[in-house]
Image (cartoon, rainbow, N blue to C red; front, side, top):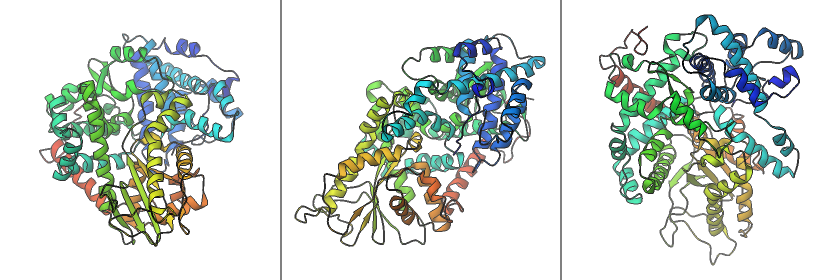
Length: 591
């Protein structure tokens, strides 16, 4: 994960700049030139932030500082902070870069073309703007809020203030999203039992049929085209081997000799690209969230039409996200309002099935048993979404595929955030506590049993919530939900010899990492999760940092998931290059 204290304008000039000062600096820059510079910065950042452990993050910060920070500022930084390292105190991060892009879109003149002779001055202006933005990302009121109140109140405030930036900086990685794409959309949605379950529970809904009808092309082809666009830009993102011909896409030339038809490209671009004037209007109509953190206008359609119909990316991570959650939101936006809940329900079912696929098919030498949707012995109804068993440890789990609303994510208001966490996700805490209470109550006359497995010998219960929403990886989220879990758990008295451990929150990204290590290196994740809850009863530690302390974690990929990725890559290659070889010409710009 990327973290650290950023350099700001205040560090250099000992004063707090204003928003109007930032606008005055930026509004004189031609819009097209400014967007090119900002897009280049973002692409370089996203390229190195996709790397495992980010070994080149500091090097890219050095390159960006050298190219975008003028001599006046650079001289002061070197004098005041001679020993600071760029990877520990960066200047450029997606948050400040996108904030500057927002101001460029809303205030700059879109008419003048870029001029080579002005490139240095534009780069320095954008660099200074990013420094100013760093000072505006944190207010005095927010600083006071972190110093007042109880320890719990300060933790809650810190979670609220960091949740949006944490999501943006620690975006999902392609090595997770692409196998997930293959399993969810190309394996599970073609499984008759999964399709039947979704149809039965969600008013006859069918993902592939709905997508084809609403969007106008098959879901698989839409996903393949988006990934092709992402890979195309990724070729131009490498700051160590610059290929500027891949900075823009020309839709007229992009298809080239690939299997992508012009009709397909037009449909895809209609769903993920936006003219600058329309983007400006969308930004100006945002009223109820904090503009420092809300980039939904860019996320919704991350390709910007800036020059003669040509396209450049606002953020590569937003393009990649389309390969996962973009499917749901694309269908959602095309449906009548009264039918939109159906797609949310269907997504929840598909998410559950994906978690079952990960755990039920897990191939490891560890003595771990997984039971999907175990049933109560008396009623035959489903108890938990799933349970894991090993030795005398039982891991009951609930799976939640929902999302925080836009207002909760980006309002910067702790009351709004907590209200929604309690409404959408703390219910999972209550479900786990109530079901655990029913299974292990000290009163054996009312104690319930599971149909699939006797529970007499289990001593440690390690409850787990699995979330789909990537933003829920934010620090202190596990602590907060565990507090809700513990409060509910206090209603029950348990039989002697049973220990209910603190709640563990696992996002789908983290679960994928766990399964990789369990299958690739026999990583005993049951022991690791159990160990964490004993050592850290308030679950304040970062889950992945804790798991990383075990030598088997993160070292070897899962052969099963690796095969899934290889199958996807093969199908992608056959689709994009039907002639059997990649075109040597640049399909996007004609250069």
